[in-house]
Image (cartoon, rainbow, N blue to C red; front, top):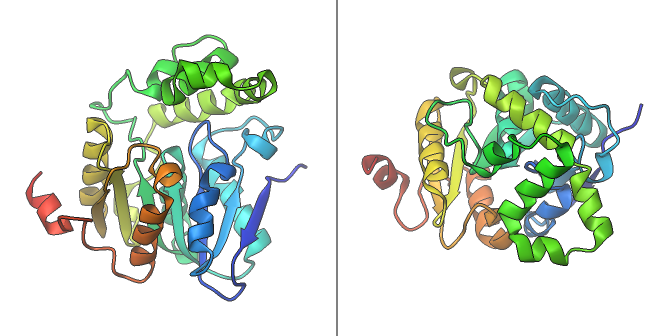
Length: 268
């Protein structure tokens, strides 16, 4: 049975942080964030099922399988050790939340960045994921998603081999996003660890709303804004996101950058 691609970096005896990438991304997308954390943590990254170096895994993309995949990655790199913090970008935040619900004894804290709550009735159907779900062909769906994220010009400048690789990730994207729309992937009342919900200053309104909603929904949640960042904040503003992660890891994640969590909640 093939294994997910994964690696660990940083001091072996440091607190463990695992990074979970989003739809149509790979662990490489979180490399800059990882490098800014590996002085403070033992950082584990992996290519989720159907992406990058894990593209040939069995095509099962439900959340239970995602959680099992993460558990196996942690068993490989940190057997018998708890994870100090699980970080998830976009769809990866739902994996981190579901893991914290189902394996609460194995993770101490969670940070999510603009995680989609697409099972909620107010989530817009014209988001990047919603638009891609309308494509009949998985490759076309992946291309539509990427064009929405990076723009037509950037997509068309990619080498043909790279475009083919990204189109081959369409089945994973369609499978996991369809599953996410069918049912909630985690139960808020059972995510009892401290959760920090990040959104960029330039977040689309539904991502901004979702992170504040999530912070209020879980028993111990906070929201925080990353100045100048959009949905790709972990890629474009890795130092700022890393600072938020370290603050939460050390118990200092309660204030929102520039305003304070109390002010954020008061303004809702």
